[in-house]
Image (cartoon, rainbow, N blue to C red; front, top):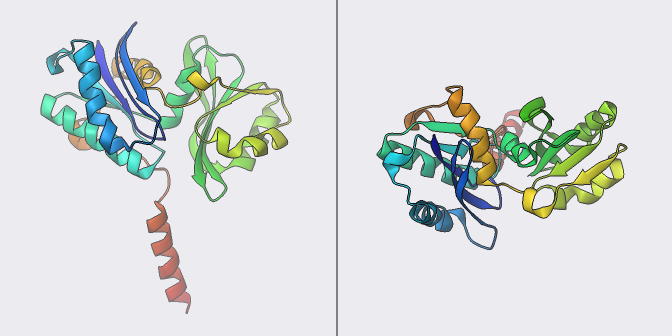
Length: 238
């Protein structure tokens, strides 16, 4: 099995080629570049450096949301285009699950945090049973205070990670009443190698779609859509 994994759901652009037991190559950038500038050149480079041809790949994996609307569209379009040209299946992986995959094998609760603005976060609650990722609370968009209340009620040590942590770090430290820690920087943000590891399991389970079937899961409407609905509601009540 050989999979090309693509993650552009957040601030980091990340690409990797993995097999069932090896990361053949990975390439991540988190520095003042748009994903539209970096993603395809990164794919080309990692395939070149690992001497991987399209026919060597079994599938293309991509984080399917939630996350940055623009980032998800770019990642989805890239994965869809490559899979269509190469005639490969696509493995859509929930973004928050892929973040939790960074901490494979860790004890206690894992809580990825991505900033969704307006006091909300994209998050979930996970644990590992051996090397198996278990979603105690599948990915969701909710108030940060509400997910912290759930974590406090569970009474277990928790590790926070994700690019939303720096945004909400003070609030997390203030509200969390159980022992907690932050993931180290090399494990704290999106990583296509972790995505690829999770995607291998999905592939074995047959959780693939065609390129034409791939649709991002935003979990909530975009800001433009929300503002349009608000304008329509205000117009109706006038």
